[in-house]
Image 1 (tube, one colour):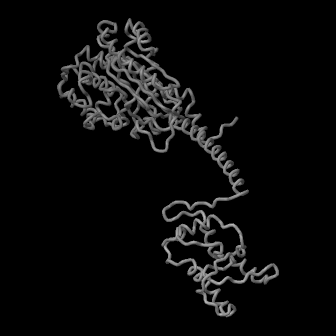
Image 2 (cartoon, rainbow, N blue to C red):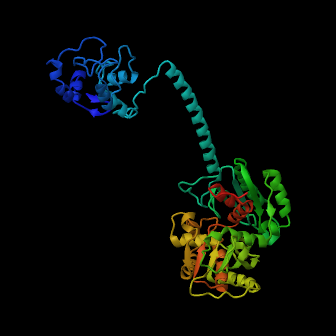
Image 3 (cartoon, helix red, strand yellow):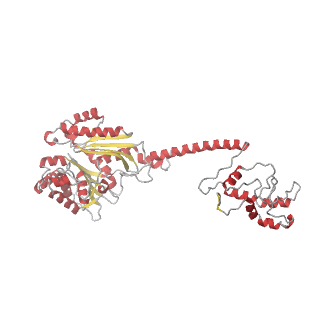
Length: 521
């Protein structure tokens, strides 16, 4: 048999247990009891006793021996159970669990043992059944139960509200995967849409750590809105249909979420086209999305804002370029001893070249590109950069200057360099390429024919006729600002839009206060 409170024990009945517990006491009193056998049967009565199976020890009345009463009290007993007293329910349940019928004459050590182990768990991990009060105790316990329930509800409500606030005001990094232990803000979603000459891109994100955010949803599709624009000056019907179809998908994603704030922009294709405004009016009518055409300076600043986290503290000068479909933005950044929270505030010179991968490939051809044709594209872009009035940047040996490229061209070069079986943004974004590695990748792509470029998983058929035009623009930039290394950024205008909106709303500042810093009134 196993004791549910103390584990496995030898099988003794109640009388044997009582003899074992009170053996010394019984031997000391053996001579005083007239040699009565300890194995004598106990009378079937409710006379008080020190243990079952023993003759009942005479109880002292009110005028009895007080010394013996004090002795029993010191041993932990509260006096013998008087005749007719109620039997405690916990005693009955313990006796049932041990298959031994115990009377109200249990010894004081047994009662002390039960008090010691009360509330502990049994052998099967189940809590022992609590004693059930009766009479006035039941009414009092019922009132206490009500009070406990109200207190639990209050505490649960407080904890739920606290958890809700933490979940609403938490933040994580700008990452595709959520980091462990981070809280999200489901009610504060931001959206940014960039309709460019070649791509339509959408990002929906939550603010996380200061200066960063976590992407909730994303969309990107090559629409070639600027196809034929250089020759006709207008957006073609086919190009507008492709763009509107992609924008319908974006509108559906935005409707399915509660967006706190959004900004939707259009760039070079809509800036140059004579029917650009007419096209945007059609977008509003068919998709409900109202896009704004931004100027080239704003586009350059947004590109810098989107890449600010890739500029290290040791960097003092950066040339950041964004090779787009219809234009290429270049920003010269000089950082002094005091760095602003917004990297765009460190821009000293910027320019926007009216040339991109789509327009350059249409003029020079992108299907079959010979080394001579490639060099012709490079010289054209070099002529445009020649009119850009910018002081020369002295490259120190400490590595405080480098290039940052944010476009499909540089990410493609990085993917080919890593020999990825399929493009993986997590492996490309932020990677460093040396000057020799960039030159080797450009020569490799130039040696491939159109079919080989289209078969590469990091290029694909949609970019096979554009990638060399982008490499020509990159080569012109490298010749103007030679640098021993270049950092690849798979980010751009959308990230800049999100960063600026979140900074304007002060979500990261509010979040620091909500996470434990006191706000002074």
